[in-house]
Amino acid sequence: MCFPVVKGAAYALIQATDMLIHHGTTQTSERRKNPVSEHLGKLPEYLRSFQDAVSYAPNQVYIGNMAPDDLKDISRPWYRAPVAGASREGKYGEIMPEDEFLGLMKIVDVFDLVVLEEQFQAAVQEKITGHPILGGMKDLDKLSKNPGHAEKISKLVEGYLAQPMYFKGRLVGCVKKAHEFDEALSGQVMFENLVCKASAVFALKLLLAKTELQAEEVEYIIECSEEACGDMNQRGGGNFAKAIGEMCGCIHATGSDTRSFCAGPAHALVEAAALAQSGVYKNVVVLAGGASAKLGMNSKDHVKKGMPVLEDMLGAFAVHITENDGVSPVIRTDAVGRHQIGSGASPQAVMTAIVADPLDKLGYKIPQVDYYCPEMQNPEITEPAGAGDVPLANYKMIGALAVKRGELDKANLLQAVARFGMPGFAPTQGHIPSGVPFIGHARDMILTGKITRAMMIGKGSLFLGRLTNLFDGVSFLIEKNSGVSQETGFNKEEVRALIGEAMRDFAQAFRTE
Image 1 (tube, rainbow, N blue to C red):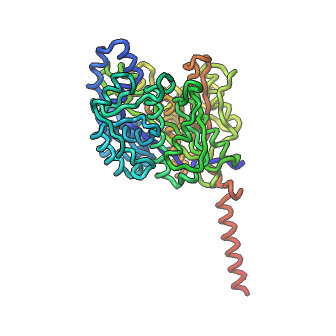
Image 2: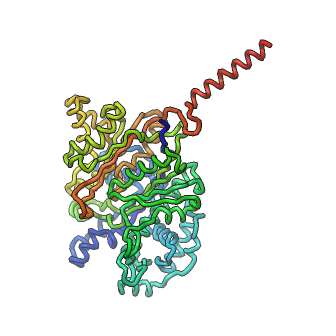
Image 3: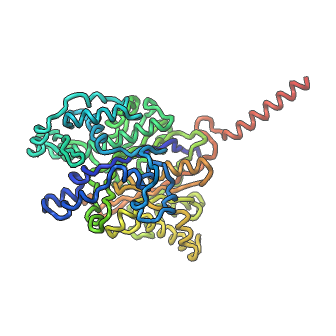
């Protein structure tokens, strides 16, 4: 079988401290209950600078400047061990400051909902114009048009006609509501959706810049964040995918949105693999933007413990899936794990369905997978809130299942967990941690021969939607390419060897004559 391949991956982080204060649901809920709460008063003292965020080791791993296992060699807490010489630019992506991102939100806004204060807009225009990737993007000239005046912006916000945009504590803009009384087009919803769109646009621009993929070659886009765009008649009608592709010059692409809470990206990548393998579309991009609502979810616990508020990062990604090129790592579509409706909810049942069952189809044992990448939440974010080390808990469950199946000695459990596991390094953005942060690393490790295969695991909490008590789980293997391309159907190395042999025979015959 000729499997589809992972051709490239890109990752974006945006530090959004003011957005955390004014749009993270923990803070907005607190403000409604108690506008003068102690938490809101203390919060600004525990926010990081942009350089602090850039120097934070997990963020450097996310954009590809460090390997996940490098975190094992850094004493925790990681926030007290800044990476010397850390850069905002990485092998796979980039970390963007909040002011530039607010400017990007105006660029991607096609209904004139974003208003930026005149001086702020001019300053941001200069920065983005000089950006190596965004400097030539579509609609950049919006930053030279229709600036707002501080007084008018204040009136829109105070009159509940718009959502505020702050930078370094100063009101610098707003996002106006898109309809007089449609709650699905309120200022809050439009703010969240524009954040999602802008961050995904950034990730796609990074993918196009850092790989050989051209915008005109993209045929299908699958967007898999946790936001929903529509109006009162179809709250989640979509389509983020085409809106993002439009901004990046993907003129030959169509697309759609896929949703399943945190498991959405895993579903989307399996869908993309099927489309590419079947030949329906050659070049498919799976992407997602960040969630402003999830900024600072655990901030109360961080502040109480006197540590920096680490949930100040919006996360985004873009992955290119295409037909087999005979080189890039393949997605094993013949062994996709899925938590079925009747699978059961116990940890053993879940891991059996999404880990053991697909491996059984291939005749693999659990220890034969080099790395597992489940919910990759950064433990420094989750542990202070009492949620523990989420990736480690997943690895222990996988290891315990291997012991139960007789594939691993109990005495070697922790050793195996240390081998096939890695520290969590992703921001707690829901859909962002589930599997996708390791795809870029896994691709490079397979291409360089460091590993043979890795399993990506996405899990989602469907009960959050109050329609079912079920949750979700999907997994797939990324594996070394056998060398058989979809275009030729032949092993490239074997073909080269045959051609070389034929040429030698021809040369020998020529000399004989």
